[in-house]
Length: 188
Image (cartoon, rainbow, N blue to C red; front, side, top):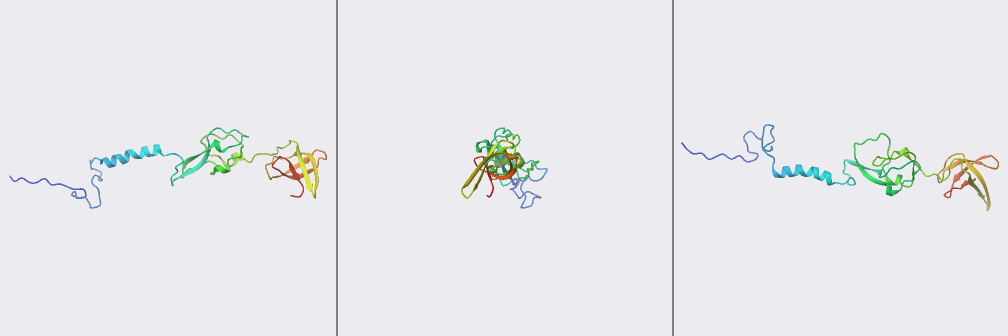
């Protein structure tokens, strides 16, 4: 009986395999994955754990979210916000604000929860004038300055034109809210 040499099969040269296929890719194959393949599979979950939410990938969007509960009437500060990554397929129930600068310095109209995106209609510009609170009205023209007390008929922020009732005459006039909380009447 003649001794024959054992036949060695190299990757890609197994009987019935095409040159581009890798060994172990057929469904009936029982080939164990290489050490490199096992390390790759083990490293992926570790990378996902280590990656911070601020490192948004191309398939993620960053949205500003509160870090603390913000109550209605509270002014939102930069320190109360952080950026959180969401999948690009994320669809909020309402339109949400996507820039922290659009939130900082504004007041909350309703309670904002930590970690939740901020809806567009949940924040408002800060009020300088409150409806019904007596406010100083000022009229200036050609060096003439007239001041009076008035009751705003609506809330107002900086630069907004609002209706004001003159407390002395009960006449309703239009005025612009100034930075100091006074209302400028007349030519702007």
